[in-house]
Length: 198
Picture 1 (cartoon, one colour):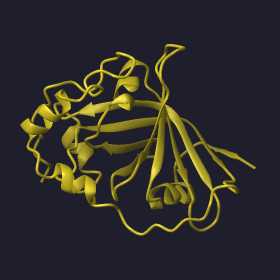
Picture 2 (cartoon, helix red, strand yellow):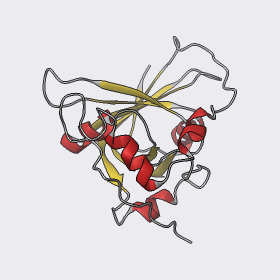
Picture 3 (cartoon, rainbow, N blue to C red):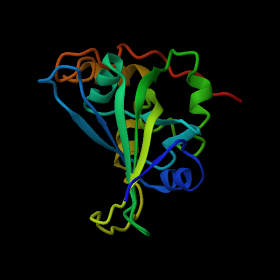
Picture 4 (spheres, helix red, strand yellow):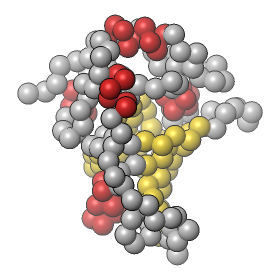
């Protein structure tokens, strides 16, 4: 049976932080808008900031639907599944926002991801989510699967990009600055990557 939690602490936090991937779901306000569901991986790219706040690094990709939806309405659901060990599914329903490189919060936020290589994947935003509803469910129907390792393809593709060339890459993509439904997406040109905190 499912259970509702007031905070992301203890066993729940341990579970979320241990998973090698999770999923994000967002949607625009328009009834005819395109619902977006994305898998997220790469070791060390998400963190629990406090008992009600989680964040993840938003790396280069071919679109920016999540960013566009969050800029419009903030609604987001994150989901983690146990593919190994005891069955479990955790969902965090909440309000999110994309924090961009020129935001004064950037250096402090990026410091929460010491295990992630933020220089190799075209980091373009940090998504911060404040939980409004936290639930788990049984996950009995989720298959058992083995995690081997992260793919190196993403890093190999984007490690060679500079701030300028990455901005040009995004500008050439149809659904990065503007979503599939015409909502504002990633603000371009990208500001420079800020220095990290000492």
